[in-house]
Length: 293
Image (cartoon, rainbow, N blue to C red; front, side, top):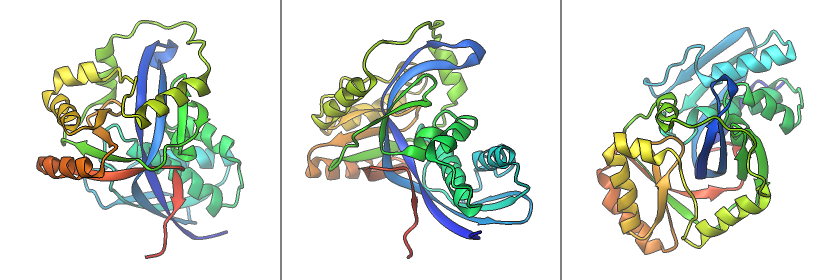
């Protein structure tokens, strides 16, 4: 059994996110197009002993049993029946509670790490099912790249990732509670989902982003913009600099996709008044091994 492993857990953005309605049990049906970006947390795992210990270089992140790393590890050990242990150390770079799936990415990395550290050799599909029990975005964060998500976001259809494009990711330091954001939608109960071909629909959205004219929506923008004017203003500022821009997830992060490097650089400079600004590229996979420094 290997005893030490360091992984990068990549963030996700939603290039499209339409909430279709409520499902029984408090969940919501949605259709989305996920894409991985190079922005990532770095996690180092060591196996052995008993119990799960989580450390983080960001002291605002809870490291107890509710941390998604701890929850993912607990799901893994219960599934395998292994009386094992895990120590995880997180270098946090993805803003928390920002719609970028940072906690989900960390949980995804945990499942990938445990599968390797304990040499269980489960296929990705099994890890995705385990991930779905931890959080709706975890299966995609394991798979990474680009995918159309349906149901609660866990029914994934792979898509051809975007290449050669960069995004400017901006977070204003505003925390948006996902539960409250869903509540603000007042979504109606939903029956059958749309009958469109998921691959064709997702590919059309990716093609539109590449052409900088996205026919995409984010259902959370209206309630979040109503509650937080600063988030709308950030999106509009990105658009004024020539980006195709929208909010990701339930916010508060916005991103802009640029066709022109000079426009991207100008926007990056103009956004220097914000707490978190990063230029990132679209990535073809989710969890990856950390390169030696």
